[in-house]
Picture 1 (cartoon, helix red, strand yellow):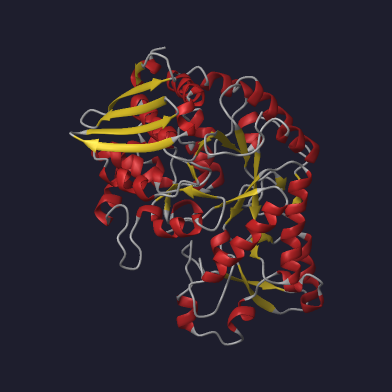
Picture 2 (spheres, rainbow, N blue to C red):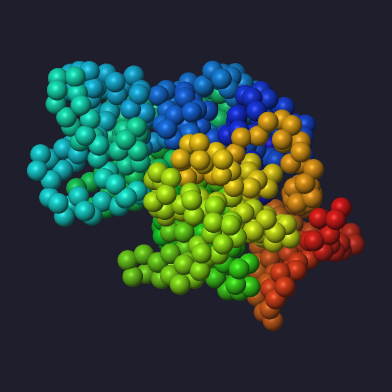
Length: 496
């Protein structure tokens, strides 16, 4: 099996325990058995100690340790020997419960780890200008700083870009660089081939700026990517923001997310108009990882305007999109989005993609077909693979908005979900997509007379997705070199 990530691949993105009902070895078995033949690689969402912190593993106390409830590094290495594994590298912050930060709280400036963490004073001095603080780009409605008490009685404002339990790292300090280097080393020792740089856009703070995606941030990402590449790994940069930023960052790294795709696919299906989607695919980076859903919400900012520059969708189009999602989900997405449910991400709508499309099997399968025909690595979220509905009960228990689309499956629930017609159809579509050599070649698209067509050609092989926008009916057409052309109505996969 090819153990390097490539553009003609399909990956699974999943929490280990929420899909397998167990640990890494159970997930490995699931990939080889019930999910056999579907995926070329797997993105393991945070599996570090602990997996059940405030932010579902994105607030590790020890980024170099596998949570013992999931297994150990040998289990990761075993999985990586069969599938290219992507792991998250949380570059911006570490848990307030970590040994390093607890040492800082106990000893203050005398701590060996004092330079590892950012206080407001380190960037703005003792008397920051209110205008400079107001210019900081915030992913959440509250302050980027949290006053925390040291053992000597002082209280200092630490940088906490996301939550009060996630303390920002000074990645430019010597301890900060050593911290990140230790994570890279642990990854390469255990076969990780692709790294997702989580929250990298916030990593560099500089007075007088927005502290988001600065020129220095681009340099930091490029430098970290070079270190990873020297160790045999590639980097995926995770940034929600203006679409031109994605185009720019794609020139400096191995892979970027296509976060604009989910709202554009929804807009296409809701409005029966593919002009915005076609425009984006004309200009989008080709070294991208496509998603429709992830462990986070459906991004809105990725298609929006920015500082007077036009977005991929207009404000009225985005407003209509969000309202349609809320309507399609029966209002459950509204319970999990915006200021509701302790959200730290006001630029996203929290909803399963299946519910965003009103659990309409044909429309959901069409959305996945569009994703699978777009350039780049197709990444399928575990909840999306199993057409999961919004988990309102989990949301009520945790009061964390994103949990509405972070369901827990037992092995029995996985087997049940795999029998649903829409899931069986999606699995058949994925297997067909993986069998077609046309996707090793060139992509093109046409939009005319109410028909939108996505095409691939490679050395006599061809594949097309033909969509009639008026009624959202679609046809798959493919041909292996020297063979007879094949036709299949997309909806027919639901009947098989």
